Length: 128
Image 1 (cartoon, rainbow, N blue to C red):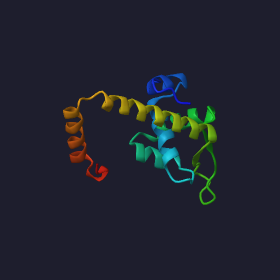
Image 2 (cartoon, rainbow, N blue to C red):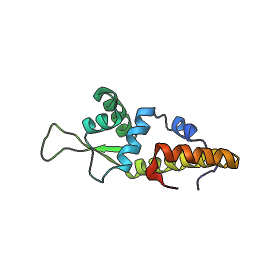
Image 3 (tube, rainbow, N blue to C red):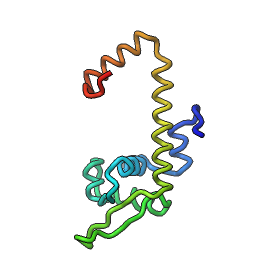
């Protein structure tokens, strides 16, 4: 059961994760079920291949990802999420969502309306 007062950043620290590792883990968790090559991850995250390689190596050592070989190109080593990685990604996402909900709940009605209007202007496809 998720502690509603738990902190997203505390959970990241407890798992000894870097920001790049969290971003990579969440991206892989939210992507197609097919494994994702490191180069594609680096491009989508906007970080260097070396940085994404370090992040992925750490996630693999921790058991959150597994590395496989591409049948088409042996030089490509795609990454897939493990059950433990999926559980962690879900936990981190839920913690973050809870923090955002607590923030919004703490706003007065006028502030909430202003936030909604600002989000509508920035991300119109959210559609309230």
